[in-house]
Length: 109
Image 1 (tube, rainbow, N blue to C red):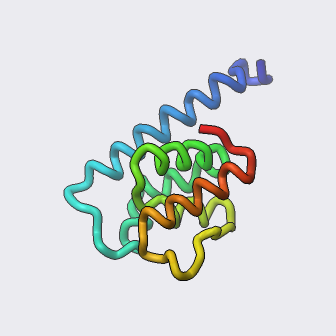
Image 2 (cartoon, rainbow, N blue to C red):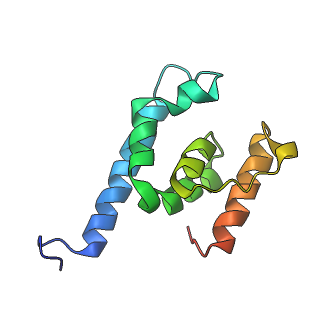
């Protein structure tokens, strides 16, 4: 238990619950903009970025489950960009690059 009385497992569960709620909120918008910058500026998307490194395995799991525009968030959090220039704009290839990166970094989802 931490000094505040919550366990690490409980805190991680809370991050997961928060993440899932924010994903649902972001995806429930009437339509994603075709502009990546507008999508990334959505309040729910920004709150996901605000979860920091705890969000990385959750984002990778979400990408694995259903590829979507999580690349900006992953880049903002990790300051990495494993996507080759020739793959930019190709969701499946971008997803594969991030999932490969995640495995190389030791993330499990």
